[in-house]
Image 1 (cartoon, rainbow, N blue to C red):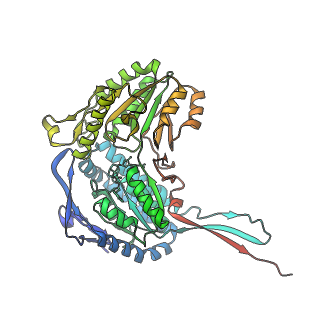
Image 2: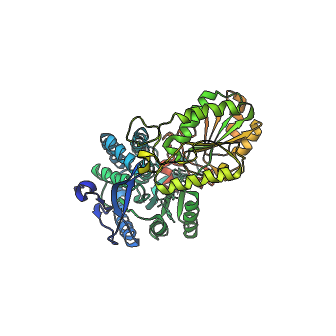
Image 3: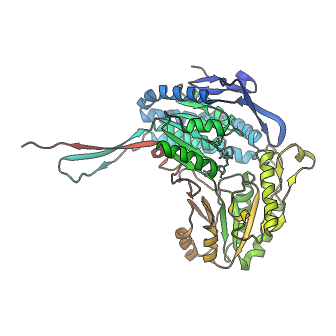
Length: 496
Ligand code: NAD
């Protein structure tokens, strides 16, 4: 089978990838994705898919899955290794496409593609590692083992902020485990998921094992999530959508892994290295224009160092160069679309009304070249109360709320006081507070003297409370996440 690029085949019209073929939606309609740094630049026209397209994709997956599950796991891993090598060759091109599609700067989009490469290599090796355990039986002449088997058909739904990394870190372990996948990417960034399918098929993935369908989450997502032949849903997105998806899956007893929103805090204690803390908050809050689930959104600072820390943070944030992410001199790109500019600005207005003090930014950038895109100034509020909306709700933009506290105990109480529990960082030189915080912080990721945004693919990734539903992605458990465990008991009674 020869698969050629949808872009060379179709100009700027991209098709769905179903059953190993590029296919138009049955709706015959498309939607547009544009460059947020230059909104008049169209990146592509994508299929406005409908329920029948999801049905086609699921049917292709159901047809392909048994033969795929019969391929030895090491061989499935080889396909992922070849995928990694192909992605390495195309890294620069894919990174540039991603910057044009969603705005983050080239250094970050290269990192996004590199994450996909690293996950492919890591998961490829899992094809040759343990499939199950041998466990002693309590009964004589009995032998107990567990085996790992595919779940069947996995529906994967992804957000726009990591257009290749997140589709990859869900899809690769799902495939390695012997499942077939229907992937629905976010409508702001469908291109990199289609490219991922193209590369996987170049690497030898059989037709129908991965299918990509583009279109609106509200209508299409529900069809995929409630499809009777889909055995598992893996979603990364907002907590609101996660709750909705969990309700549908709960009703049908479908397995459902959710990675959701965050309101991540950095705690700065009075003995902290303030230069390091300010540099880390600058990176964690304004990197990816604050559009990371793990972005630093609150800084909880002990009062004796509040002013010294704030001065350093403002000085660092003022130096950030905002602009088109393709320019290597730029530190922070646009937000993903104009709607997000409006949403972030609403929080600036809310912060002012709540009585917090705006000390940097607080408005869209609209002069000269900025007028063509969706740009917002790095924004900092201080004197923020812990229960204000700007201190408790996910804003998903370049926006930091500084919350002063008196003590370590109060800092932990404030850090744990939101509904979320994804990522928290603590800056201190004290071993005592470091170990107490390891115990006390209620979040799935905890950093010491580092930004809230430093995930590594060999470490489990996920959140507590409303940041997820208890699953963990990446790390050594990534494949188990997409597997059924079967416990097998073999008796061999002796007759004499
Ligand atoms: P979103 O929830 O709006 O959309 C996520 C995906 O769900 C998209 O593909 C969307 O089309 C789809 N969707 C929307 N409505 C749906 C429905 N009713 N049924 C099924 N699918 C539906 O999120 P977003 O704006 O794309 O991404 C930003 C959010 O994602 C933030 O809240 C962020 O914190 C979160 N996020 C979390 C992680 C994590 O690992 N915890 C990582 C990245 C982003």
